[in-house]
Amino acid sequence: MHIGEVAKLSCLSLRTIDYYTNCELLHVERSSANYRLYPKTVLQTIERIQLLKKQRMSIAEIKQILDAGEIQETEILIGDVFEEFDSLQGKLTRLEEQLKDAPTHVKMQISKKLETRLMTIASLLALM
Image (cartoon, helix red, strand yellow):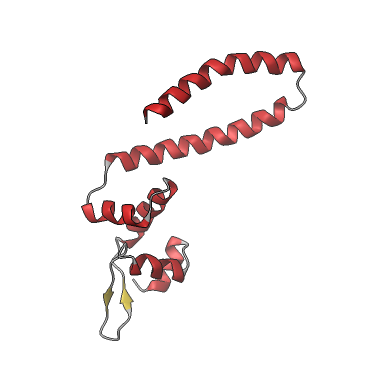
């Protein structure tokens, strides 16, 4: 695929694709007319890069994972965790709107019940 097609299908800018290519995250070949040609698998690689970037990994760390050449089970698990977290964040926003006008005693009851659960979540995060 030409770079323009990769950009269109991945919703990335040409500049970003160039950057990933220069950092050797994306592999490219040159045609006889010196056009950059990307393999069909480039879109999957871009998806992996975006997932790893969401985990706040550096370009060097991402390159190391990509160079390992294997899809790590943790990447799949982390993707699932991020999706679930995003879903929960949306639900929390909706609940905040509902609780905005609730009486103080109701807010206090909810706060006490949540405190124990939040401590459990904090313990789990500390283990990571």
